[in-house]
Image 1 (cartoon, rainbow, N blue to C red):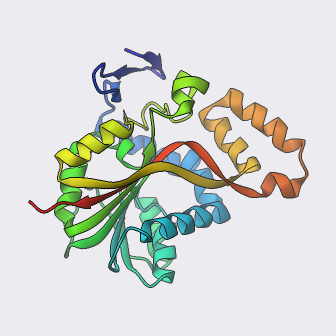
Image 2 (spheres, one colour):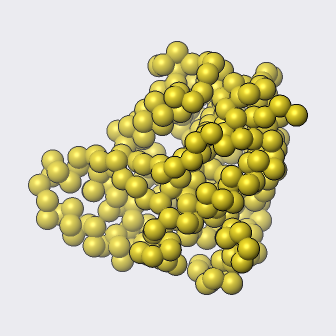
Length: 270
């Protein structure tokens, strides 16, 4: 065991470095957590940060299109539809799925195609050329099952794009350790490094074509509010720093590395 946090044990495999929660939350506990978070927690704050969300979505679309072909896309964990909206503006036939009924209602209100479903229960009408899953696989109780399902959704040589926390990054290893904001019990269930995610993708029929750092364009003022939810002590420090700066500088968005990785993978023929 690495440590205990929020009533959960964080354990690590000594041979490969995979970290996970023990015990895992039940599906019912996860459903209740996300519905509550969309109403009043960290996701509610993110949902109200329109410019932040749009900027992240546009950056992700630009990067994803450098490795993906075709126009038929699926965004898993689409939330309120910011990435779908950016993809639609770019001429892609994109649709999404999310387990939050409230998030799907907001996406549909924007005229977007979104399905309220768990990935295990989703049955697409056609295969996709690209599937994106941003900040999602770490939330699933069965990452292997998720990748196996996505493999079936994709056309041959189709592309999967992931972003996820990197437990091998400098934040959990050297800077913050157990206080890393992505060590979030009841929310992030599995923690991969480059080796473990590459191996899992290979075992489920994918070939990794690119893996590296993922960045988010965030302002210091927004970061302070977000950190106040996930790491109160660090949130207070950043809040004080943001308060000491001119407002234009505190609100300006910069690409920040927070210990996340970006992975592109291609479905291999079997």
